[in-house]
Image (cartoon, rainbow, N blue to C red; front, side):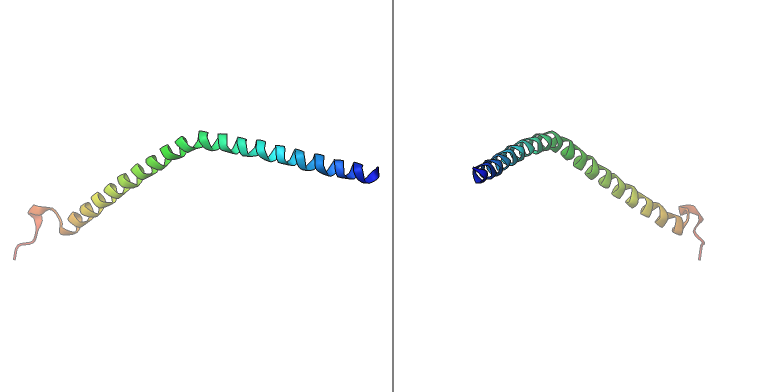
Amino acid sequence: MFWFAVLFTVVFTVWRMVANLKALAASVQALSERLTPELDRLSQASQEAAEHAERLSERGARFAGQDREGPAGSRPSR
């Protein structure tokens, strides 16, 4: 009778573990479905920010290049 009680306890524990894992998987799936659109939106915003930073960097490089040459009318004459 003792071993029957041990077997019953083990089977019950495994059954509850499987049920808990199924519930956890369902929760993770639901969370993933909620987060995916937000992560896509953040990815798009990050891409837009990177493109804007690249344009600003190019503009800054052009401006720095113009500073080295000086204003167009003040070049020394030869």
